[in-house]
Length: 118
Figure (tube, rainbow, N blue to C red):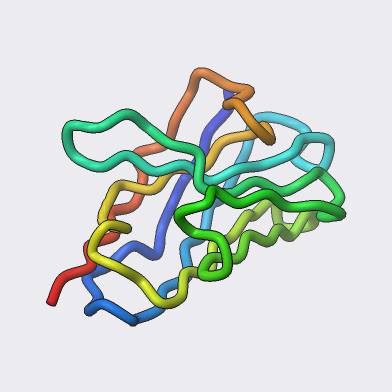
């Protein structure tokens, strides 16, 4: 069974930093590209960042380019999202999934809430 467990979300002031973690299981982690997504209240889930299976390439949405960094540890089956210079508009529930431009699996984790407020 494919599972994703996200953690690390919190409340933070604008300009702050945070690191999200995602533990994946139920599939051959090292063979899949991985990605982070987010969903704000009343909005669709958007792709935030993605990373190739071997970490050789990454992609970022325009709205996080230069502020967020995605990374992975294949030995631990973990993917991370370092978020710097956070803005109120980054407030959302953040999810991870396999895939580079689309989600490879229909299963989603519970997500982790990130709230940026003054």
